[in-house]
Length: 364
Image 1 (cartoon, one colour):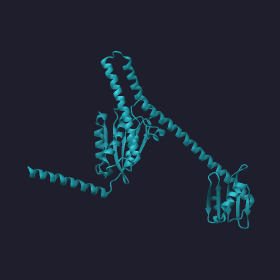
Image 2 (image 1 turned 90 degrees about the vertical axis):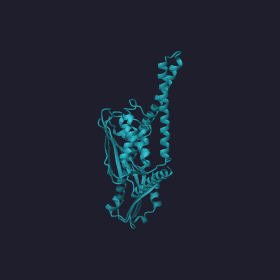
Image 3 (image 1 turned 30 degrees about the vertical axis):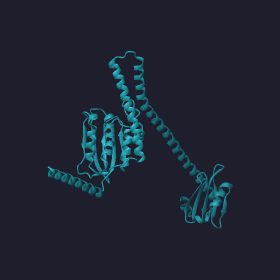
Image 4 (image 1 turned 180 degrees about the horizontal axis):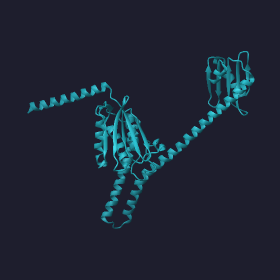
């Protein structure tokens, strides 16, 4: 584009053999024969037809051709086209260096991610197995174990078996969600009903924890499978409960954002650094500073994300080290026809209950 504008040419075309692509600009590219473009690169020779205003020249980086350039519709000297060729070569090499730098950084981050995930998976499986092995070894080596000690060791084995079983179940649940094998019963639902159901489910684990809920009842209904979304919200609440001090509250808010409702669960925990925020929803990943302090499988947040994604929603996290984290998810607002269908179903259900009640009275 810059060559066409600067030299007022009819067209300019660039051939890059490494990508096997032609890049064109202008309206006179019909005069730029692709075979001549390739010949200029292969033969490393300049072809100039000044009467027709057509030029084909190799692009050299040092003594090595790295592509070719075609220009049509302008009268240029040999020195001019050679200078343009040199500048194009420098620009291409600079772009290639930036691209390679980006690829190298992506590969480095990918290897770092693989190492973090492998470390998390290894820890999650090894910890219960180690505990079970130690308990079984103690039972086998003790000829006359104390009944209380024997019961304690068996309890450890039982708990760690449950933990391994839960890990396998969550992995299976995750596989089903990702494969789209889970059917959703979508209905217009109040966000407050979802939160209430989730808090009721987490009542035991929350114990005396203060939970501040600030949700406007006038918010539009969302299209959701209550039971499934409740699973996701329970994961967010449990995460906030596990990773923040017991004397600090959890805050839950909701607001309308366009055609969706955004619900946020805030905690005052240690926070998550920028690098970990990119991996926090990956399977089996757990925070590097918390994985040995807080028990878990690293599957809660990925399952929550998969459930919300199945609802055509999204999840995100914002965090500041030392100040806590905010996990947010969106759900689409229920469409008017969904609301009408839900109201009709409710009215039908009420009518059936009323009819059954009348029939029972008649029988009586």
